Image (cartoon, rainbow, N blue to C red; front, side):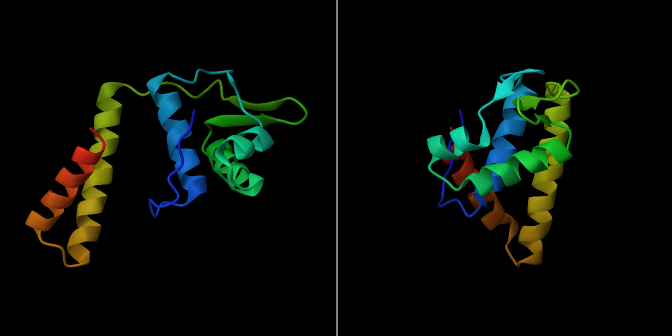
Length: 124
């Protein structure tokens, strides 16, 4: 279900958070659906259970997951797929933030374009 890249520079707990959110927003994970337990997911991904717990905790804080002691972790009833317009708006905001950070780091617009194109090629 999830794919972790230990070399991406993104903390593993954040990769879990991002990927589960994406699955919910795409409708691949539906309200009420049970996720693997912390131990199960940690074993599948070969990572520390505390890392999975941190990702799940962040998702629960944001209202995407509900933890039911003794039962498991479930997609919250309030979690709903994201519309294409909402997704586009969120991506535009994230890109704007990346551009601001890149410019603050001294990267030129042409360098930022190359970085974007490289990432797009890697994920195509």
